[in-house]
Length: 388
Image 1 (cartoon, helix red, strand yellow):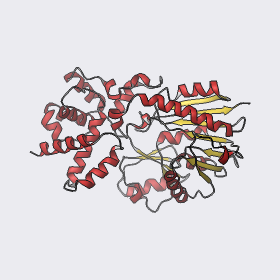
Image 2 (spheres, rainbow, N blue to C red; image 1 turned 60 degrees about the vertical axis):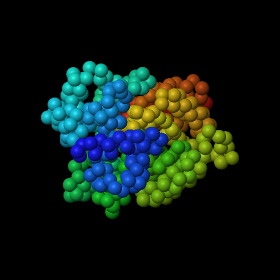
Image 3 (cartoon, rainbow, N blue to C red; image 1 turned 180 degrees about the vertical axis):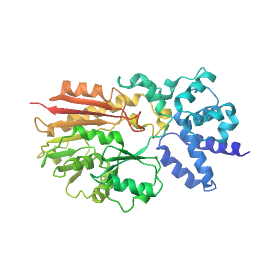
Image 4 (cartoon, rainbow, N blue to C red; image 1 turned 180 degrees about the horizontal axis):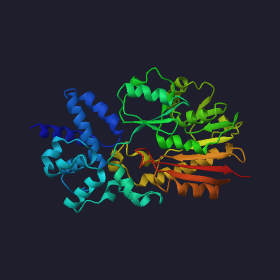
């Protein structure tokens, strides 16, 4: 039977995957190695494995295929062979909102506890609405782009002509369905950047001035630097990262965006970098810190299953140490912008409390940017100013 074929493909993928690689990378390699799988097989296998991980550890004692059927029912608005075979009584309810489908599951399976979807709930920042946050994992986040000022209508028209449903947010943001092939549809455009909605909102904390010297010290692919540059094109910019390949990718992204004047350095911020930075003093530092990424697990739901709670403390110590090493290069009265894509208080509010207590910093403002109600990531940002 075809449903048994689909379940077997799902089980083989689940057995082969250990969480070491991001799931999308693993699937790319897996499908390349298993070329006998047709496009339909790949599509259903991807849907099933992603749905399965969105259930986190809920109903963990139940049969794996039943858990798959429940997860697939909760995550999708179109039915599947797995739902039809293992939850036939719920098939007619597939188009209901997630909240109503959750109620149906809870009535049929009393052991179902929504908090088990995100089993690290005791570590959450206190401002998180837990029920809404847990429920958000059954909805795929959107893909967001930040368009240059005055270009929103033009980009929206191109998307519309290609049949892409697009939502305009504010004056500079457009949301489309995740998986939209923007690189093909907008191949001729250089007036946008792919950047999550919450990530864009961190820019409200930057407040750069012309000719300021800023350091994006964990720059990765340069998204925050590009946001900073759009806010104030006359900023003098240094970007650094411990990974040279990230800076190489950044070069290409900056070139396409027209950002030409910047310095870059490969730096390990846990080491003494005085030899490279002894003559630098900055008017602003962006510390987009290495973190658990827990605010982005709606995009990487495999982490709900494989993440280990001891890593929260590891990242918290890492963040404290990096901040301690970079703040010495910040001018008095100037801001350190601390950012994570985490929902854990130990990486967010507790790190800020540590920095204020142990470093010459005072807190101006901080915010947990709640993306879970907007099909976006959840991020934390704080603006701290150096004191004498």
